[in-house]
Amino acid sequence: MNILFFGPNGSGKGTQGAIVKEKFNIPHIETGVIFRDNISKGTTLGKEAKGYIDRGELVPDSITIPMILDRIKQKDCKEGWLLDGFPRNLTQAEALDKALKQENINLDIVIEIVLDRQIAKNRIMGRRLCVNDNNHPNNIYIDAIKPNGDKCRVCGGELKTRSDDQDEGAIDKRHNIYYDDKTGTVAAINFFKNLSAGSGGVPKIIELDGKPGVKEVAADLLGKLA
Ligand code: AP5
Image 1 (cartoon, rainbow, N blue to C red):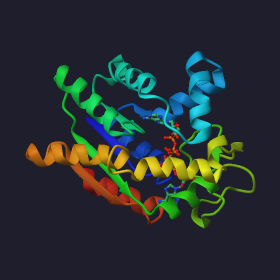
Image 2 (image 1 turned 90 degrees about the vertical axis):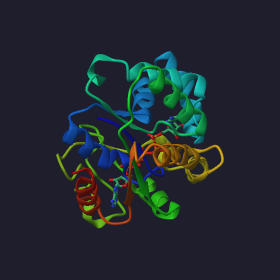
Image 3 (image 1 turned 90 degrees about the horizontal axis):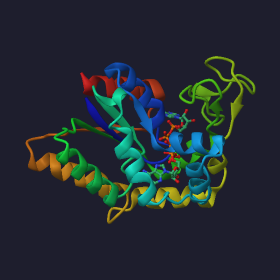
């Protein structure tokens, strides 16, 4: 099963992606996580990516596209993959589509979380990341997933903030890229919606309302995947 996961920054892609990964037993490939791992290890890729990420800009396509196209060729992706955070603009969408067609690989499902940008922004600013598992939901502004004091509400692990989560200007830039329907992420989503409309509903398009709580969105998602 090959799946793309779209949604504005802070809408819950990482949170809900963990559920999709478990359901289909496929790797959850998060572009942002790959970059952050490289930054924390001080690799050349990390050094190249850091400035762009801190400013809320996209890492250049010349770095990101080959990185992801190589990643989905790895052995653990034989039975499928879930891409979260890629494609993020029309150029990346077209490059992915071209690469899949060349390799005769089908795209099965495109999931889109729909969420107002102010709600997404509040979620980003309140997000706290568990050092044991990025996908343990913790948010200081949301009662249902408030941390336990300064510890993870799921496992008691230490919590940290992401450097790009506390800068409102950078968050706005990330959202401007997302909601851009000419060349940005919404343009990429529309690219796949048009493909689906022209190919008898393949890939399947699943739209989710991101406003309800984590459990409600998960239930909606699992229902639509069934
Ligand atoms: P990335 O890591 O993708 O960061 P992002 O854009 O902020 O989006 P996230 O994926 O972190 O948010 P999310 O939707 O997963 O939300 P989450 O589940 O955490 O990218 C970082 C940077 O890397 C980019 O800015 C760019 O520079 C670079 N980059 C990445 N991909 C690239 C690409 N393809 N090309 C070029 N550059 C690229 O949820 C957010 C919070 O809300 C959490 O606290 C969570 O617990 C909470 N929450 C989730 N769901 C709910 C709910 N239903 N109700 C209440 N709270 C909820």
